Length: 621
Image (cartoon, rainbow, N blue to C red; front, side):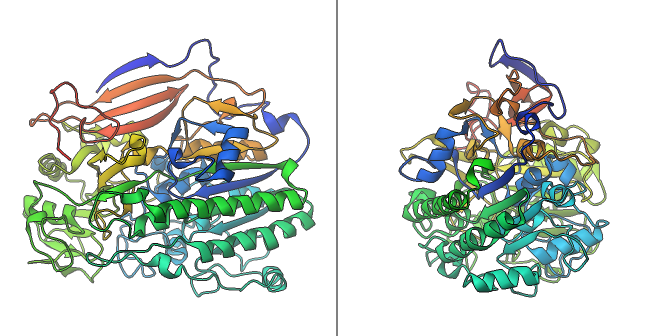
């Protein structure tokens, strides 16, 4: 692996490792409140005073983190785990939204590859992994233990993850959790105090559904053209009419997490661009969803003002990831040449990675989401996931399908099978870079998992191979990161939206902050990430917890008054060249010991990685 370093800024003070001392709130004795606002899937450059005035105001009057980073794989639960703990994914074990758990999860539908955006599934995984599948304490849990008022409101899955080890049925103080499941059997139970407060505020005890916003359509029917307005209005009303007044009455510091499903949910399901790349995720439905989440933020800030809480409340805004328009095109995939009832001709079907690997490796394919039924003929796995081998209960290879990247597990740690799998993937034009578990050895064309902090103290099984899919910029007339297109292994259609890749369109998330413990009108040029969010939140609140793993973010000291301003460097890391002339290239920035990952893949196949003067094979659009 070759490395090259370029100094980004000179004359700056080096940041020491670990938490900084003497920063911001540590300099005063006034307890602060903290709101962590997550606009799911918001691309950094889509925020303007016209499209999202409330968020633009926070960015322009507070701190503008203009060099922000989502962690790869750029998925919701993965980055939620980083925000909530301050740890990278190699420690949290949340490698994507769908993972292999090496046991059958009942609440997930009796499968070994559960989709974990589900409260009941998270509870089940917790129970299996000794009560805490994250293996690290969350900011909300630490704040609750310290006696602060705590609440998490919004999208099911990542909202609960912020305090997933809390047990409302036990005595003591508990976090308020309101998400899609509230009021149902799978939801976190409401306290009598919350039930009374919701009733007095004229709000239902059950969260309304997404309605038309939840409709994704199919190959012939466009998806939604409606933002998630009704459901998010309920969440915003709960926050502003119930939770914030309740917290003020308690007269002690609080932490509130507000996780907005928009623009993510609308960008996934939008029906503006069925089977077409343009306008993709830049159509009217997306713009309505951005305005929707902006209205939620404006409502919360207005409530802070009216309750007299604004002057003593810090607000951190960070999207979990960026977004891309889906492509289903490949010239090399065998699965794209097969006819399927639900897939347009010559398009990649859902589960194309599992189908193509089964063929290349000559292994039987079974569907872990369909009672391990054999997948044969003109069929594809129902959810895209696959178990390969003669015995589906003892598979040789497992594929967890996610979107802009997929996870491959080798339960038997078979190095020869790993080599065959890598060789097969190098032949596909939809692949753009691979990362392989260090314990399996080095393979030309790939980089190790440790190079992107995916190998740590995780309680859940570590993937053997993480496959990044091809991405490029369409001619959408905006900044390239706003025009990102990616091949995606998903039930969603070409022209709809997805994330998860190492495209800069997916890693470039919106981040901003404002409040008494942040600088005003400050543009932060230094790289920051979602892992830094967790560490900075803990610092602002004066929280200290035990750590099992050492893959942690840093306190964003440069954004805090009198904080240390560190140096930053750029680096490029390259794998050895494969036999067919491909190499995984990783663009890195560094602050002290912290590494930030801009883009990775095969140059010419990942947005943000240009071809190396003809030395690297590329794939056309």
